[in-house]
Length: 423
Image 1 (cartoon, rainbow, N blue to C red):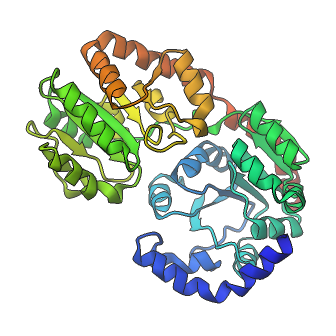
Image 2 (cartoon, rainbow, N blue to C red; image 1 turned 180 degrees about the vertical axis):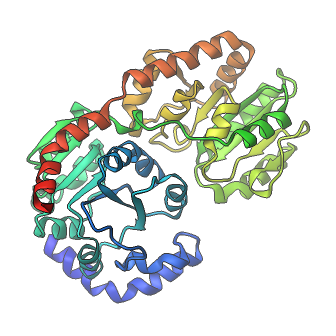
Image 3 (cartoon, rainbow, N blue to C red; image 1 turned 60 degrees about the horizontal axis):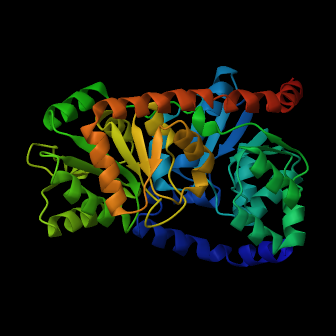
């Protein structure tokens, strides 16, 4: 199966250029950096030790931030790759000196080999469940340590891998070390054939809260004034309708209410604005430079990298991808900033975080638009309860931090070997 995959991706390599151009036209690739997706570098390789860290998208890339800082502090250069334009834009603003970003090459042998020939990483760390067969085989063939960090594996993914038992076992056997988020994930990787698995915790608890420029925060809060505000963050199609229905219910009892809607994919901002306008609501879009003035009912936060601002402005947050669609979105960032959190029933991708926050009464589950409206209305009318939930969230995420320290401890033998080889 792995050989068939390798042959197929090799045969499809000539189609990579047209495919990437088409994706760029759809806004899914950076037109100026398409060659990176074919393994061509756009930055110089540092002369010393180099650790390669990869996170698929925004969430996985941001989770790597504590590790990036720890490597840089030890004078180890860092190459960070990701696969989405949004993650690249965010990393450009947040990477420290000593770290460089490139797009991950497509998983075709020619592209992967070109990438590795140029960058020659001393170690490769991939976040969560990013398993590209040709890339892993090429890393393994070069005897470069390959480590999964913050590793997780859903039960449905386990079932898919088991349907390719021979290929899966061989691929998982190439993982030098798997550092799982929790015992359940560790057991799944062991069952799939990973030879060395340890529990290190969830890196996302170590990530600093998203920043916000003081001037922009003051300007935003000044425009909002004393109005009651709540936010629906990382929403997906179908959830905005639920949020807008909840807004109507809450607004009937809460004069002056403003709802912030920050979609997971900002390019959907105009569509969300139309949904609100069709309901007779007054809308402003962040991407158009519009302010949340007194007459605005729904503020569409359709920009990237500003969640820190909205979390600081709204003490109450509904986290999306949990009602109309499933899996959940990361609640740790709003919890770190003292927000009370509401969420739907389907949060499997962040089950541990939601379980801990719910147990601490820092978050609450709702089932539908009516439940969301009732919970939000109650909390907006009970500021002391809202603050209590926020404090509980801060304490909970602080208690669960430490994964970056555990991971660096587990990596120490590899780092020592790197240092000896460079001498």
